[in-house]
Image 1 (tube, rainbow, N blue to C red):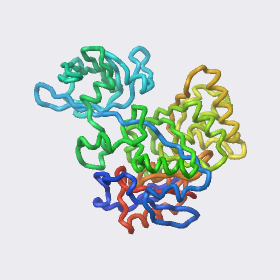
Image 2 (tube, rainbow, N blue to C red; image 1 turned 60 degrees about the horizontal axis):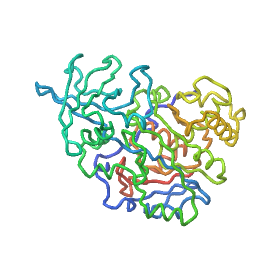
Image 3 (cartoon, rainbow, N blue to C red; image 1 turned 120 degrees about the horizontal axis):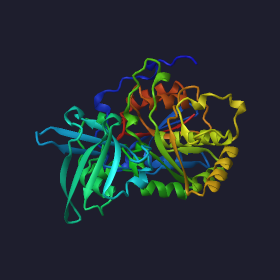
Image 4 (cartoon, helix red, strand yellow; image 1 turned 90 degrees about the horizontal axis):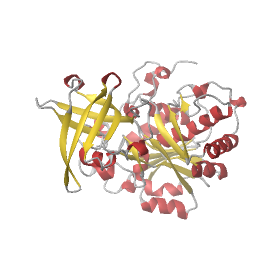
Length: 405
């Protein structure tokens, strides 16, 4: 495959165009509409007027957890823990985030550790909390320093890990905002439909939606569905390789319900994901189905190159895929499918399910810009230039776009 130069996906983003705080009214953000090669400027609350007829909008209902915790050593050194993945201590395998949030008494997580050289093996750090009117002691120690596994213990043991986090943790704002989280971020850095705790970053395309916009979508007859991809810290990882194909993608946990599969199977119009995480979830679903049909080992683990290994004419239809996944789910006896996806959507990728996207404006040289380029080609430059010329706000708390190739 030909090289893709990082330079192809860079643009000049002035610092003052980065939105460091959200608008007071979510749906009053700007909406750039790119459709049939034409660009129009609207307000986000007008989104239902610009969607293709019979669209199905698919949202990511993950909820951001307060994933940053700080512990101070007696010497005054500050150790920061950034939660990545819950780990089963017996097997060392990654666990379902939703199950890990209900842990009582102890938990083990893979973490990014700030100032880790100052935290020695065997050294226990602690802090006192007040929870539900009573004192609580939280301690942390290395479970496996080589693998960055940290053990959390707390008493009384009756409290859940979710309750501990909401008392001790901070919302992990994107590093490019260059500010500490404030109390208001606990609400504004969540979508109004967030439900399943486990993300360390918000699916920010959804931040513009309000109950009024959702009601307007329903009144105009648009279908809506929700799946869950727990956004990982790797979403902020910049591309450092000169050839973007050599970038190593992070794996993220994604969960699909039987309702998701049936909704997609029964829908005949365009499928429009809200955000890059929803798009990656939907496209990954197709490739999980391919792996099921091919009876491959570990079918719900998807690496970043898998989708590029087949001639298009040799691939099954989306309908065949969804039927195979439904059959697998029923035979498994489980209420949902859980997968781990590292899908990497770059120019040349053939979209199987998604026909457009609702998304924010992304960092230069990011995997998200590469994804947008895969969807609308080099026209992404015209879109971003139009946004810059019309005073759009960029990145997580910025304005929105509807892109239909």
